[in-house]
Image 1 (cartoon, helix red, strand yellow):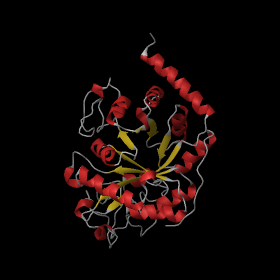
Image 2 (cartoon, helix red, strand yellow):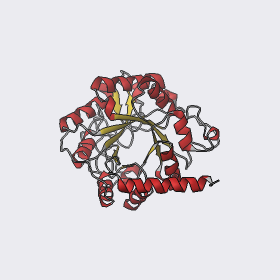
Image 3 (cartoon, helix red, strand yellow):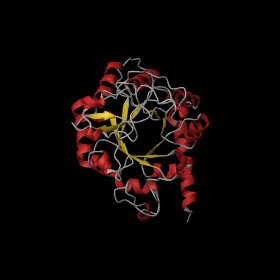
Image 4 (cartoon, helix red, strand yellow):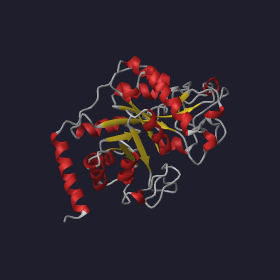
Length: 331
């Protein structure tokens, strides 16, 4: 009987051959936070730039304000590296959570320029500042897509909720209901995926909107991994790889996921083949170096999330992947 490793290698070779023969139109080029290496993250200028350039998916993050408005932000509250008050002063750390602010208060802050002396500024020294930029609502992002005339771009929306800090956001049930209600009202249910490290929210999406694909985010390394192979964590909604042959893909399949979205440093060709054999797509985050993007494509990922969608387009094009057309728009 062939070993598990041999079986996986056989599956991998078949999948690579199929990809070589098939159209690459299903490969997913995602602009992380709208492409934060280029423009202020999670803002209308960033999303307009990505739409104008041409991406398959706008990746973004959301929170919910005290008055129930869904706003676009990676942090669960005002980011001290980004948010400036009316006097031009950056907010003090840690920043007020959105759940304690009304939308009119959130809109007072300027998030168009990184704090100059921050680690963030050193990470993205070439980001184009757009002073006067405000934190957008998800409704405003949908409106921008409509304005562009782009009726195929998708939205990969992350729920910014932390099970270890329940006081910094709404609870999972109300959070998910607020998000799904807006998506349905705006008519974008067939163009979104919902992603999260907090799998509780994904379980709720599967129950309340089963036609919306769920994206299971994972991180297995560093000081704060969200997934452990030997146990459930606070992030995994009671699911443990230990109950599924120590396999993260098998665990996500058991949880009802459609897409596995791991940190790119955690994946191997064998793991991608295993996920594909289970019917899962694999979209890796966050890949910014051309050589890493090329390697991810070569080992068979279905999509890449990048702060540099311009470089992602360049490398994907060099690999023979069909590129999405741009739809120029101004915010």
